[in-house]
Image (cartoon, rainbow, N blue to C red; front, side, top):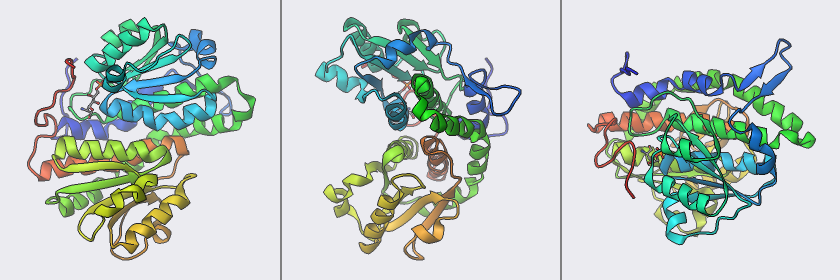
Length: 374
Ligand code: AGP
């Protein structure tokens, strides 16, 4: 497959901007609207023979590294809500270091863009030895993880060349949301919720097109932050993962120290760092955690924090405590899909910071696309 940069300067830039199309491909043939627009079907061929076993699992255990782990973390709440099965998170290397318990009654889900990451692959071997049902979520047909799992779903995001994962992250989240819909598909009490999510999925590529229009705004913000030493990102609920992933993007390509933090932990340490110099992104889009995030913003403002608030369109006035606060307004979507929208301004910020600081975004220092050694 011949991949070129088209009209873009870098693969990372191209891959960020092609997310409306990559997400459409991820959903193609899986989310189907019948002739009457009210009739919608979800089909995940790779899972359909295993759904009963997964529903009866003792736990669903997500296993991954880096961005793939973050994508699973973003999908965790909706999987818990729709399936009712406890969902636990494992960083592959940590599971192996601890030799953590994996049971025959577990469903272990291995998330990996490349399907070849050594830590994830070894964790898969470990889970197979322990008798768990093993499912793979990869972007690479025929990869080791795809071959060695009992069942799975390809994310079909298209080849990702940039070392920093961007379009694979959003496609992974969408696949795991569809997985949650499929596993929870037998529950009548969640029917309306499922329908709202399916409608949201159909409309998601349009919303992604809309949020990509923030490109210039993110470049302006990058110009402002170009010489900073550090950036904090606070999120919670569905967007704790966005905070981790946004910070990972900034550190891996822009080579700027950045930390994603759980906003609920703010008073348990990170608050000590807050002053008028350190830039802090707070993700405060509308969902069940919104009022808690408003209170976090107030507390950071009271300590003269240098705030950049990401909020839902139309909320700028109500979330920003003063003129000094900078706002990123994003389109509102169903809560479990909001991480797909919210990561995009942070991907753009990381990209522009990298270019402005004179670094190579496609081949960041010391990193490889696929980490095939432990
Ligand atoms: C993503 O931007 C990173 N390059 C890295 O964290 C990556 O996600 C991780 O190495 C896992 O890779 P995988 O998805 O191919 O398993």
